[in-house]
Length: 126
Image (cartoon, rainbow, N blue to C red; front, side):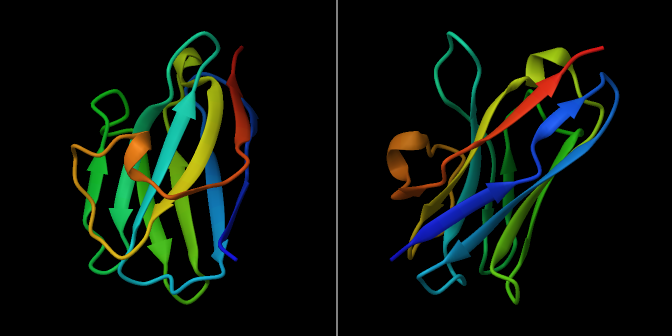
């Protein structure tokens, strides 16, 4: 049974940092596309970052480039999202997602992912 468990959300100040983790289980972690998505109140779910667990290729939304970093640990079966220079507009529920057996594409949206975590809330305010 595929399970994705996010952790690390919480409150941060503008300009601060938070790190999210997504622990995966129930499937072979390597050679999959893992993504972080977010949904702000009143908005559609949007892609934040993706990583191919095979070779580490990454993709980022323009809104987070240079501020967020996605990484993976194939031993711990975990994907991370390091969020720096936080802005109030980063406030959202953040979700981890998995697309099994393929690489990633910058064209992928939520509909391209097979499994989802429950989400972790990130709130950025002063």
